[in-house]
Image (cartoon, rainbow, N blue to C red):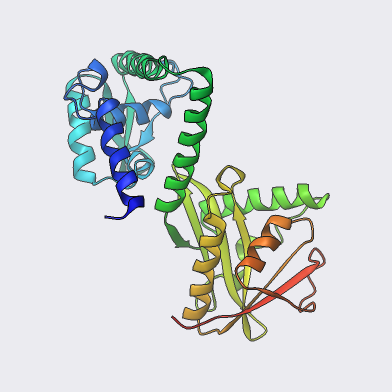
Length: 303
């Protein structure tokens, strides 16, 4: 056991006990923590909470938001919630392979009660602290949450036309357009065959069903080229960009390349700093990208 893992394990055990996750009735709700969390996630899909809205979410979406929970485990918890009259499930009329789940009227009441109990419990934990201690705790927990989420997120290969990829690229183009000071079109992104196998690949990192990072690698003029690297602003500072860059370099090696290149723009100083720390060397212009001002190259070492 290292010092780092000891601290992490001690915090996990302490926090789980103090928030009541080990109790049969989480926060006195009558539900164990896992089942209460499923109910809570279903309710989040109904924001703002209102029985009039009555929106449904899919069981698969719930599983995805909770880190890919086992389908049998989720089904058992849903049956418990159904037996209590808190949720209703049905086949999706648009796709019979999917199940829809929504809160009932009693389920909305239970969600409200769970939200109230959670808020009260958090308040009890904070009350003994001074304002300065609360600020320290909030900052520490926010940092810990970001770092843990960044460390546990997975990078998945998807087709560039995948809705998740398209959403990520929409945000990518919107941000660079704003930072460059002009409107950037999609440049035929979804139809770019160079970002697909066998000569390219596109990757997404997602959290709670939404993209938080993306990037691609392709063959260009005899070498690998990294393209479309983007990290959600809320996730920056946790090392996710550097991790994504290493992943794309490994993919370039898998595609048979020993050299990788990329371009960027002078206003993207954070990206330039990351590339330089990762061992990229500045080179002369190698393409006709009118938006790029800086060009980099790196020789990749075989693992």
